[in-house]
Image 1 (cartoon, rainbow, N blue to C red):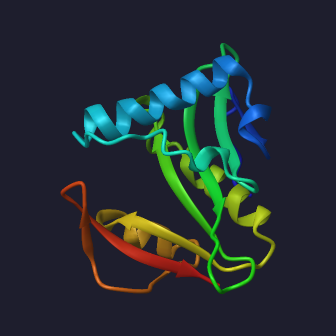
Image 2: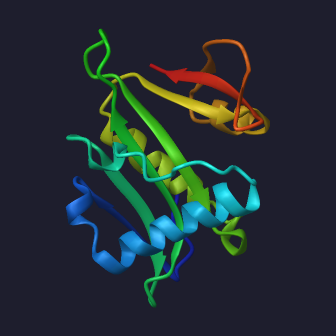
Image 3: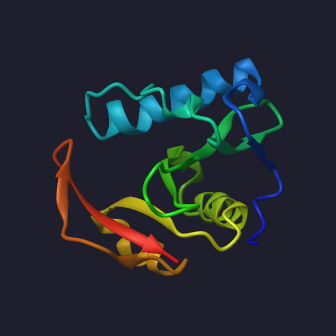
Length: 154
């Protein structure tokens, strides 16, 4: 797995209740800053999926508890046993280009232990996700007026 910048540490919690309250707040704030404010997508980020049994939160934080990046790994209740999905991948602007999201993604994929993983990638990031073994699995679609591409690994 790639190393984080030395001022950051990687964390995960197998339940939302396992995320310290201040960190949960900062994760939510970062997701709002990226998706709602920066990308201008007015939607309910707190969709209940963070509370799903089997949901795992990943984040990188600095010594002051500021969250640099986050993502969530979710179980998918579909016909395929062990299917997981990754979403809510968000990196603070100051940490983009430093490999933080890549480290979180690698940690989440390691957690999947060879099970198939889905992602609805923002289309401009498909080559980046392909570098982690994801392949396009369907046609491009619009979500909140942003082009997305379904991708699958495994």
